[in-house]
Image (cartoon, rainbow, N blue to C red; front, side, top):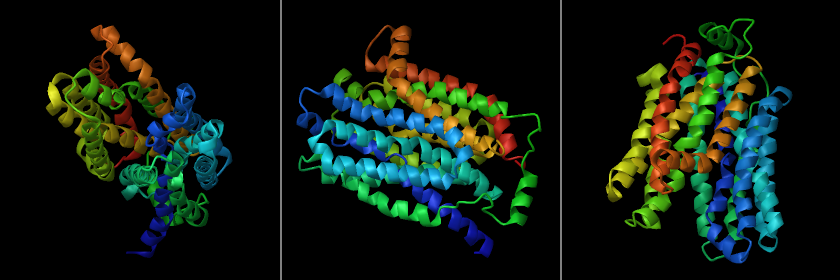
Length: 406
C-alpha cells in the first residue's frame, strides 16, 4: 500500500469508528418492558423517555447544518459522543431511582444520532478521494449498524436479570470510540495531499458561482423527508401485523426476521458501490421499487411466507435508498454547503421517520378504509415506489455532478 493510501485510511478509519455511537439511543427499546414494570402507572412518561431521543436526533441533524459552519467536524463528533456517554452513565447509575433522570439521560443520547452522521458526511466530502467516494458513505452506515448490534447485544444480556439500568453497561463501549475520535479524528480542512486534492477537484463538476445550493440536492432532501413517512411503515407495524392481525406468528418470529433484515441492510451498505455502478442515476428509483415491492409482499401475500420474504429483504431497498442519497448529498455541494446539505438531509430523515407513525396509518385508512396494520403497510409500499420514482430526476442530476466520469 502506498504512503498516500495509508495517510488517507488513517484519516478515514476514525470517522468510521465514530459511527459506532450514532444510533446508541436505540438500546432503550431493549429493556423497555422492565422499565414499564418499574414505573407502574407512568406509561406516558416512560414512552417520553423512548421518543425524546428521536426528537433530539432530528434537532441535532438540523442544528448541525449551521454548527458545521462554526465548528470542525471533529469538535461536533467528540462533543456528541461525550453527551451520549454522559447520558448513558446517568441512566446506568442513577436512572433506576429517578424517571426524570432517565428522560434527561435518554435525550442526551439522541443528539449524536443527528450530529455524528451530518458531521461525518461533511468530513468525508473533504477527505475521501474520487475512487472511494461511492464507498465511504455506505461504510459509515455499516459501522453505525455494527455499533447498534454490539451495544444492543450487550444491553440485552446485561439487563436479562431484570435490572434494566444495566442495559446501559453498553455505554462503556463508547469510551474507546471517544478516545479514537479525540486522538485520530481529522481536524483540518487539508486532509489529503495537495496534489491529490487538486487532481480530484478537476474531476468534479464545478458549480456555477451564482448557485448557492444545487437544486437537485434540495429536491432530494425534500423527497427524503416525504418518503421517510412511509418506508418505516412495515418496521413499525410488523409485530402488530403478524401477531395481532394475522395471528400466525410470535415475537420470536418477528425478532428472527428483524435480524435477517439488519444483516441484509449491512450487506447492501457495505457493497453500495456495486449498487451505484449497476443502477447509476437510477439507484434511488431502483431502491424505491425494491422497498415498495417488499412492503407490499408482506401485506398482499397471505401468511408467514409473505411476511418472512418481504420483511427479510426490506432493508435491501431502504439502506440502498438512504446511503445512495447520502453519498451524493455529501459529494455534490461545495464549500460550506456540504455541511448545510448533510445536516438538512439527516434532520429531514429523522423528521420524516418520526411522522411515519401518524402519516402511514392515516394514509392507509384514507386509501383502504381500515385501521388495521395491513392498511398502513400497503400505503407505505405504494408511496415507497412513488417517491422512489419521483427521486429519479434529482438523483440523476446529483449523480452526474458527484461522479462526472461515469
